[in-house]
Picture 1 (cartoon, rainbow, N blue to C red):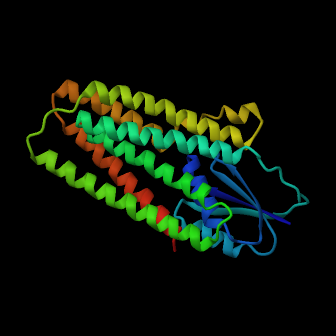
Picture 2 (spheres, rainbow, N blue to C red):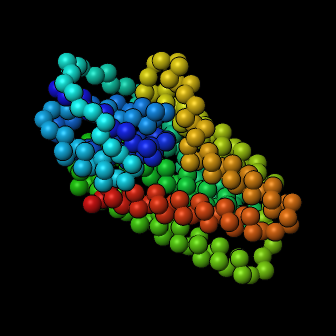
Length: 264
């Protein structure tokens, strides 16, 4: 058995972890994957050569780089029996907030909330693909990934068009209080999701308390929408909301292309 350590600079939340797991699924030489999200490290236990694994990691464009490969005597790995249950919990939270943010975003006329809801949906796609394709063939997983990626891009394009329409049109100001309140709850939900997934990886309390949940893209987006809400009220302008909406739509499209790569 060999142990290879990768440094993955853009792996800052469980969404990237799931993408990596899906990408490496089907490589028979892999015995176990051990993720250290706070330190952005992936340890792969495998038999044979590392070339195919290394190529797959690099293809995700997450800043993956092999650090070392060495022999190991470890042949037994603890499987977390509750992992599937925890993934279902995270999926449910993300889907719930997709619906909440999309609904409140439309009602309050906030593109920031609408865009953030799509970011929640993007995470749901990743968790959903992992769950629904468990035990399925690699071809099945790739097909689901393609559908999810194209659907996500379509929604983001519709969002961009709406941003342009509102930017050049005469629209009412979005409801800043709704933006702030809903984003605060979304911020809490993202924190819970990341905590749940971090807890599933280890029983070590220190590891569970890792501060990586505050560096995730989702948390930054939530804070961005909150700030945009404050600026909408302060400046009496919808431009801050449209700006944050545009930024998030760009991130959603980037995530969609990342998912599409899994379909290749």
